[in-house]
Length: 363
Image (cartoon, rainbow, N blue to C red; front, side, top):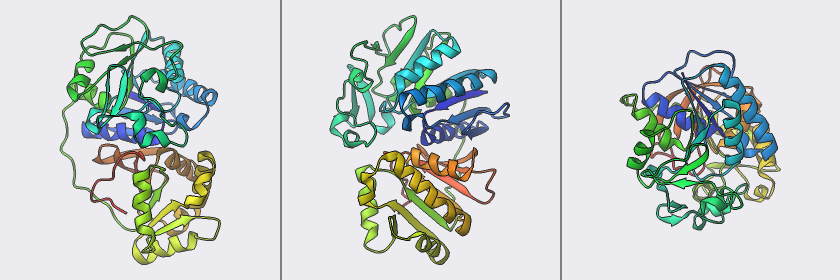
């Protein structure tokens, strides 16, 4: 069994999608549990939305529980652009797992996310010159890796795929192409914790498992779309739907009944956060969203729940008391449809806020 510890739900789903891409029996959980029959067990934490102390506590608990299952290897899924408490969490994993080295490959070249000469780029632009600079919780203000990781006082070694790795500690591997990811996947030293984005994990699996042909996309009505993302592209898409009444904003006025009516009458409803409420903290917004959505799910019982934004999705699933998910279809990279054993008849599809929806899933 392969185990993955992800720092948010959409990252967990993304790696779950890679697992089913390679024919692995895959399970995603919010807690570890005592046993599993899965080939790939992915634990979705919510540490990125916590402060550093709480994140370390969560990762300590999860890592100890994972170690008891004795997996073949453990992969630490981090944010591809290094938001969150990346170094603190890696140090926690290293200590508990007694690993000498953590190899961190956060680049994801298939999505235009590359690292060269110690700097991070998105589609050729320095990362701090993109919309990631306005992230509400972890704004990226510099493309230098040490600045992004807050390690300038104690720099983390950065290596190219052709260079030798240190014996212990944490090292960041540069990657400008998928070939670079495969080079890294073929030179992993013993007793090494593997960490990074989905691209590196995919390269590791490709060395061991063939790719299975994908099924045709399947979505059934009624469908409830929830946008918890603050990315400009997503806000623009939502705003275009407002004029035709296609979007219901979570606001200070009653609105749930409109969503229920839209689901019953039209088979589709879109819920987003009213722009004026975006002045609230991200934590407050997630909590309000989760509390507001729960009665809609119970009354209207949609067939598809489609969410963008990992922390929003996590908050909703926790509010509903759902803890286990079975990935069934990978619609696109990071866009994964899952069944919920505790909610027969309902499927949930999630994606990170910075990823694009595939053409057949649109507002």
